[in-house]
Image: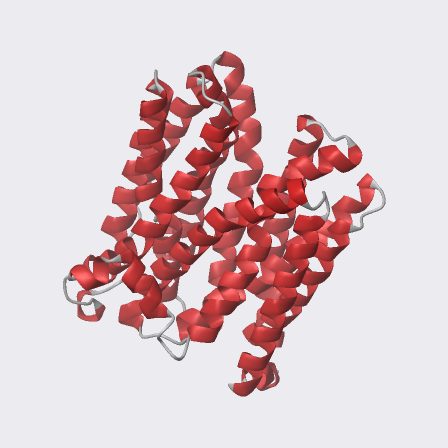
Length: 400
């Protein structure tokens, strides 16, 4: 199959290049803030602002892609990302940094649109594997981006931002000349009206869709369990084992490798044999065990296998659950629903780090991981009961 006939390869490259730029810039964001005399509170506010903008824009971009196609929305998002990085590199005030983060958050629908694109071009039985490739590209970008950004920062903080801008612009050109449209006109919806562009109403509306309501609750709960890990783990590893920034950087690179192997290789082999429902339940069980294991880790080297367990759990459960949600809605609603799942993820990225930080400070260093384990166990219970009632737990046998 030639390159022009490999849409999954296009999306893999698009997501990887996008996350490469993101990984180069975001870890350095606190340094951009301190350069303008801002503190930790300002850096935290920027993180929440980014998630809030994604929460508000995700369903809107999804609805627009249902009406006008995936390709134009994806290109606009990539162009917005390039503009945001350019603003960040030129920033000479905190106001410019806030504007850059707002622009990046508002146009941060790349992943949402990529997921909808994959739902368009894959058969239902192959959708989990396709979504797993997005996760692998995500992990690969986040694995290589921080290292490249750190090296470029030796030339000045402007360098990672400008290079990330150039990477995003190259992604726009790639999309213009190579990426084809996945949603034909006959499958598109009418131009969205205000109710379909109201992000809060759209998010509430998704929970009213009976076929996916419980799955959305499960997705929200498991993302909430996982959301605080990335922001809290450096504090935890330093408090428990004295890890510095270098040790944490190496560790997150390891997590990225795990994500690539699990979602890019392992998931595609397990899904045809076991089916999405079994992978969701198994993944959530591994997540619950791994998060609770972090709370009681006796030595620093045990963090590697324990977090590997968490990575395996999330790598199996999140793409499989997203695929199940996608398969239960009409083709014309894929963008709207994928936008809703992204908005849900953004909401957990606002709530999760706050919950983890408060429990870390007020209860103890292990408290965020006990809490995460309990949330993952709750998601496991919800998913098991819901999926057993709708019979997908037996779907694997029909594939054998």
